[in-house]
Length: 131
Image (cartoon, rainbow, N blue to C red):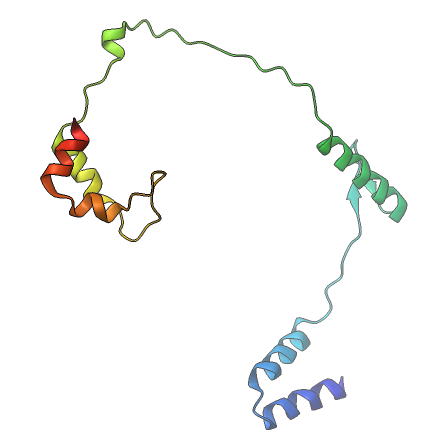
């Protein structure tokens, strides 16, 4: 303990304030007990090292082995006709507002087109996007 205090004083004297605060914080933290317990498959508490190791082993084997899961596809019929399901294409004002609301200096899209090109492209590019 005395050696640690001398180390802190030495760090302060040599103007190594960061190291002094780090050691001071470790002194203030004090003793923190740690528990080496694990819950078993039936929620029992395991305390022996070998039991804990085997529990982790079985747990990871369960996670890493592929499980046969049944995937059920569900189809929801909303009763709408094709005409009702078709949406109106957006008009030029909606597209222009969407482009202007995007942030600059972002990575290019899939086709390597920068967003600034769309923003600065003007009306001709906007009408090309709409058609």
